[in-house]
Image 1 (cartoon, chains in turn green, orange):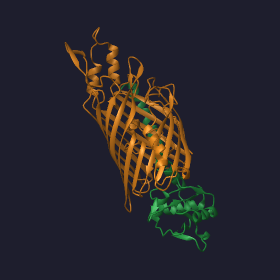
Image 2: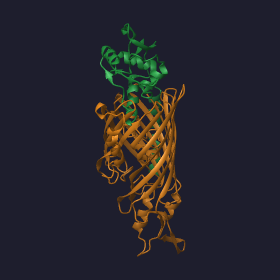
Image 3: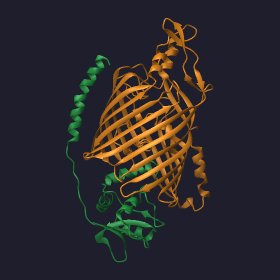
Image 4: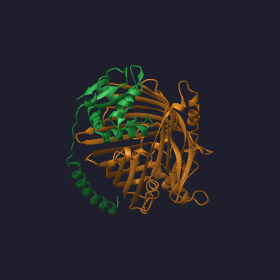
Length: 150
Length: 407
């Protein structure tokens, strides 16, 4: 190594270490949410959180021989945030990032999205194999509730 | 048009003929991604093909578009095009297909894909063009240098096992591709490209924990058939001149070479940090121009709100330095070997002796938009073929800034 190279390297590293230490030991924050019910098209059976997580991450496409079609609320919706937190232990941002990678590696596109709970209920009623979620206060008699999340 | 994936286009054309597939009923979705990235170094010789002290947008910039078609719950197709620096000449952008594939998923556990695929075993092998999908400004070239060697027109069969805590996937694949290799002739001051046909197969084992942790091990076997009448030099001949001097004779040639590539990688959450580390070994037939090469890196990152600062250390070694020294030390003989040809030959050898420190951060405006900034300090040892020119026992500092998006 030349003298010039050594001196450049020496002057670089104290700054590097200072920046790393400062950034790494700063604080972070988190948040919490409330109850969500997973609903399904007529005929679909109960689910557990593991299978629900696999469905909404594209890893499971059939349940008991029936093709399933997950559907999400729009990004940022509070019920969607609560659902992702309860089922995947993931933030909305992490979930979007997950699908960016999965799509980029040729393993499918993210589930379709609907605007609101009313559209969600309508999509699930009308689409064979559809699985969605609603705020548990939106549950009405006749809905096929597959899983209730705390 | 050599880069068009004819086998996969043929497959796409055949989709309408498949039983149970109604192309008119397909659900289509489109997405786009890209990186606008600039990089500048403190050295004149180009590093990593295009980074020099004038700055460049060519090293990291890329634009891509993807269409996904879902025909039913079992059949789907994906086509991804990228506009990126050409593989067979410098300072030129060209469009080329990255993925064009049909996928068939008979059950949850099996996935069969045919077409143009990226089959290597690196952690970010398949998503490396989508900059927003990782936080490093640039994936360490010490390991990702030859990642494009694993893009094939072929077939991939993956089986997945799910346990309570982990998802385990074994992916077997084989295929063929045309690939361009680049060397740099120091004395002549120009790049030297040659094309080759590759056939290959591989196995990749991936274990994930449904969250952030991922462990991957892989193996690829490639046979390279260069587009050259005499093949590729196998062994250089050194002719004694007396007095300890020697010159270069006619090398022995061979038609094809075989490379075994081994991959080992892990991405592990540790407290508030995410640690990624990878190693790759290219075990090449006993030939002088491309000796066995080993590369590795470790990256530690921490998410702090929208910021993700990181620190990376990467290294690459080859065992061909002795051959490089011997070629470099040959004596020109008038009418037989010139100093220019000796220097050009030495600089075209794929030998690496360097390590890099990268300190950077990503700032995510949203999950689909990131700005990344990085300072990289590379120490070049006796020789690194990533540098166009003679640079030995010196440092190269590179500053990079990029905007990455996916929609």
